[in-house]
Length: 115
Image 1: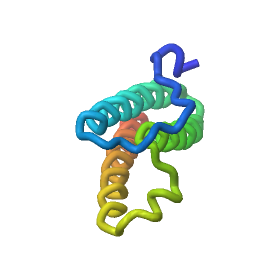
Image 2: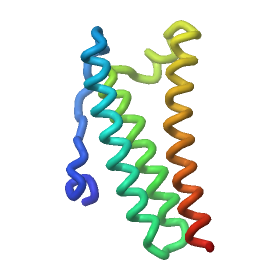
Image 3: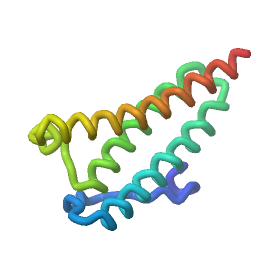
């Protein structure tokens, strides 16, 4: 329901790996739009006063985000693991930054609920 309301792009097929900076920028914008909209969806669920509901929804949303971003960039888990160590480290660092920002927002929201 939330995907339709927020007009979140449904990515069904894995793209090819980007070959130019223009393609990379376009895909980055698509991925960021999905992350932003899923974050809004997560925040809206967090206002429902049912203990644990937001945690379950967040886990589902994070899995959806990872799957969508992998498809946008044309990568799967096996491909990432077969990359050079420096490339893998950059990918994992970028993912960790995005993930920690997402988790940080969730923790902040949870603290504000308690206060």
